[in-house]
Length: 464
Image 1: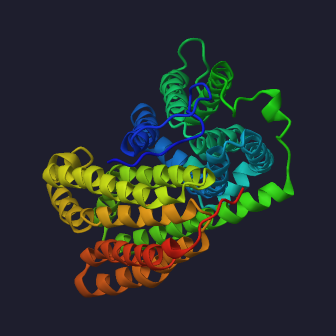
Image 2: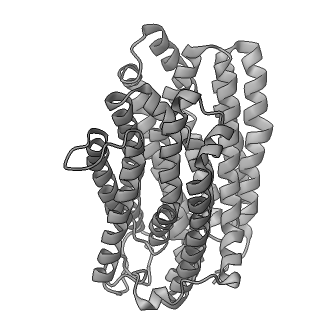
């Protein structure tokens, strides 16, 4: 690659202009983000293992009751972070640090305010909420304790998620990785200690994982504040940033216009997954077990594709902010190439090692064979999923969010659910899984077509 991406400021370094090959800039941003995604997933998996093995299946089931609530709350923060990171990336590319702090401060203020809503309501109404979710009576007490602590921790959790997102907006993917590593490490030490009651800590049962999560968030955020101040990062919690931590309707209007569609699409994806899980459940417990295992395996294959898309979006936003719109196609082209190389390699590895990988989760031979068969149906389409993510992410970097969101929602409503419903009645459980390739093909064609024939022909200007 001969193209270069000039950034106004170097992340985690003194404010010095620099130029380097585009592929190196992209890879330096992509690698820590991929590691962070894998680490975050592993921490959740290991915590589940602690609960399931050290307490029992009922403990794991009690904690699981909170997951749907957690996802819907995270959808708001992830959407807020997506909108803020685009605007911050454009302001950072322009070299306007005051604007970066204004956007970050307003977004943090909104995250704090919204975080206190579930904290207050959850602290009071955790048990009625668990009852409303039809939590089984034998785990209602444990599920309530877990949910109450998790909801009380929402203000700091929202700030944690948003902080890592906006740091990426200024081109810093390394600090979020170390912050997440510290949070995960503390959680993995404290969770078993609280389960066993060692080191003078109280035994907290199922609530151990929630309490450990809260403790780890405090430790990680304290370290993050210290680290950013020490490095002189423009997003360090200094008086220069803190004076901007206020609800600014004008700034938040722009952030939410970009972020709400992203959050809405996440909710639609979750809804579709629930529908497809219901269809899979109709084929018995073996099909249900296969569904859960395949989704865990596919998540690790999707991480690179999603990380590539986020990286492309941030670099695109910085290029737009710096008036380097000519770099948008080279960034897109490189992202598509990375998707082929990295996501494609993951797909090939899982195909070759599908037997041993599936056997890590399941011991029943018949279920292993079923899971392998269904995994092979969907796995190859992850590459098309990655292409669609790249195109939509690049368009979002300019503030174009409605079209990419609409295409994603249409693919779910008009392709995924109808195809799964029809084919499952025609060819059985295989039909549920063929809905995924059909959906990713549709997303690829719609996102790629709009990018090529509409968006790329537009005059792209900075939003800040």
